[in-house]
Each structure stands twice: as C-alpha cells, then as structure tokens.
Amino acid sequence: DADVTQTPRNRITKTGKRIMLECSQTKGHDRMYWYRQDPGLGLRLIYYSFDVKDINKGEISDGYSVSRQAQAKFSLSLESAIPNQTALYFCATSAHPGLASTDTQYFGPGTRLTVL
Amino acid sequence: AQKITQTQPGMFVQEKEAVTLDCTYDTSDQSYGLFWYKQPSSGEMIFLIYQGSYDEQNATEGRYSLNFQKARKSANLVISASQLGDSAMYFCAMRDPAGGSARQLTFGSGTQLTVLP
Image (tube, rainbow over all chains, first blue to last red):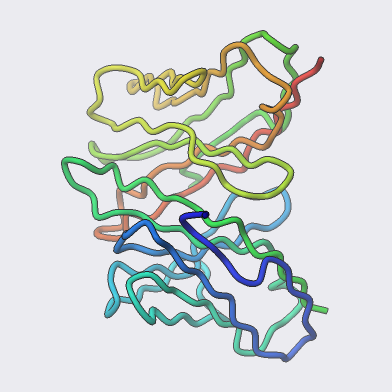
C-alpha cells in the first residue's frame, strides 16, 4: 500500500462549488504539505502543517483552506472553486529533521482537479 | 528572485548513455538542502536524491548521483546508463533556508528528459 494517499485522484467540478481534497499517510510523519502544480511549472506551496495544532500559509494560500484532522490526515478545501484553480494537487509529508532525518518530502500520487 | 534555475527545458539521451541535468540555486544561507524529484507521465512525484550543504561528498543513489559544486551554487543530477523508463520530467528543489521554521521546498521549472532507444 502507498505511504501517502490522496482522494479523489481526479475531480471535475463547476465554478462556485466547494471541493475537499483529502490526504492520508502511514509514514508516521509529523509534517504535511499541500502543493499545486500548473502545466510547465514546478510545485508551489499552498499550506503546511508541522503538527495537528499547527497550520501555516504557503506561497499561494488565497482561495484555499486546510484542516489537520489527525497526525495522519490533512485535507485541502476550495471554498468556492474557480477555473484558475484547475491544476494538479499534491500532498506531501516529511519527518521532523534531526540526526536521522533529512526531512525529505514524500509525495502522494496527486489529484487532478478541473474547474469548469 | 528565482531561487532554483533549471535552464534545460528538454533533454535527449541515447539509451545506456549518461546524462547531466543542470540545476543552479541562489541562497545566502549556509545550511540548506537540495533535492531531485522525478515526475513520470503518470504524474506522481518520486524522490531521487538529497544533498545537504554540509555534506562533503557528492550524494549517490544507484544510477543517480549529484554533482554538487557549492562555490558555483550548482547541484546537477547525473543519470548513468540511461534506461527508457528514465524518460520523465525532473525537478530540482531546495529546502527554503530563509523561511525560518518553514523548511518548505522551492522547485525549479523542470527538465523533460527523453531517452531514445
């Protein structure tokens, strides 16, 4: 089984709809992240969380919100989807950096979201 | 200012040959990390290799090695003995040194590698 899973894998929705993307991990990592990828570009950070009670905005948080329901679960919501939020969304996790960890981020398979 | 620069939008290599994908970065911090990820056409992001700024030796992972030249601020990925399955987009990323506790990754724009049979 994959260590980082995302649901749904694909979603088509209409402008104005509320959408939730979910991420679960079995890696036991404290840190979780949401990124989006637009065609021809690298990934950009939307939100990140270092533990259950910690939520931080990333580079492009406008129009998004997140919830860290448990150490293993981190969901991303689009409150009112718009077409320019059409993108590939990735969840990632990393361990707390330390002597035994490089805090490498491990990514889920991605969710392809289309907003019409 | 762009922190990670990948100047090769596309690269071709013959199967079984080696290929170098370029990455330069910009930082004033002394402690940082550099990563390479592979993104096949199926879309997932696969971690390949990591280099810490204080690591004295170049990182290696199987057929992947990282040519780390700190003074030149470059972290090129070398793939030896290319295989058809290596055809993918490759991203260089840096752990953000200026973000305090953020430790977020900043990604380059990627290089599309095509391995020719």
